[in-house]
Image 1 (cartoon, rainbow, N blue to C red):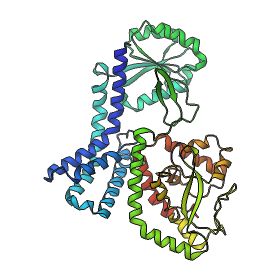
Image 2 (image 1 turned 180 degrees about the horizontal axis):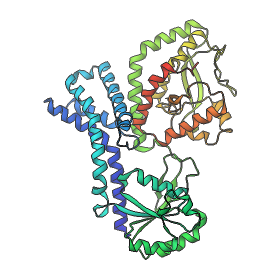
Image 3 (image 1 turned 45 degrees about the vertical axis):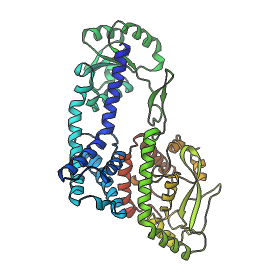
Image 4 (image 1 turned 180 degrees about the vertical axis):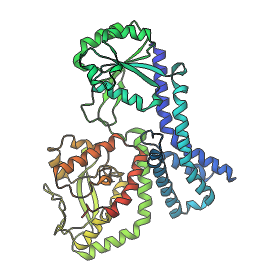
Length: 460
């Protein structure tokens, strides 16, 4: 493949990715503009500001499937939570008075439908518009093992990539028995160059293990006599991949296996959303904060705010605030987790722990930049040092800022983790959160948290 063709293919892939990222924000803004035109409202003053806020916060998570369940959980619920949060902010600040109520209602109801329609249209036209020569690309996979079948499944699961896998090539005698569809085994490695030329194959993906380097080099030499693009797929899935990507350092390729998902523009978007959400919530709950502070002070001797050392981003120590709910303020080398019927918990402390009111001062931590609204829950330093020795990959959870709520907490792992298996499950949820992070995923977790707090029996 020529340098120009390589550049063009990379540009097309970037356009596909950029389209997926920007589709929902653009739809939300365009619907707002359309509503303003329909209701004869000039698009100036507060409207561009609202459009900027919505554009910043309306970034999607994974590319939604075209079914009603995905429409509800990945488009409707996140959108209504986000728009509801914006309305709450607008009502509390008086900013909402600048917009006609009928316009706001129409915008809220039309936007998720428009997003869904846009997803359906883009899924159909994107491959035809962006791929070379206006059609889909035919590919073969070298190696019928787990890596090759995983790659084929990912191509099949996302038609917008524009790649049709014709079949596999493998020298191993057992390859045919490993494939779900044995008919997809097209031959051995020596047959690949001839097959590629005869059947107009555009792409060859090599998924052989590193131990097969001599075979791989022989195949690469043979493929020089074809016009197919050749890609090597390294077997890196033995590790916990977090935001895995390929980068270049002055032309030298490097593969990122574990990377923070909130670097660069993504980090700016998350920080903006954190400041907006934390600011709005603190503005609304300050009477509750004062009442809780009085309750803590009157219910037992000791400070109102409990300060404890936790691990923050990249394992750096931070100070986290909570309303004191116990008769002790432990922050040493040994910290005992609170358990059911724990005699250290005060009567008022039991109430604020049950309702998670004790965590509310951490919104101040969010404004300080120490924490995020959503992220892995921070553990006491003593617990970090204990579990990092017992659970493989435990410290990976510190690749993002800790959160007031998290993916583990809305999946039933809130409160005490009295067994090692429970802590392992919590860490796996934290890693899954970082692997799939997006602003819309954060909003979905916040929405689920509101329901979990009132019905969860694990906090005490």
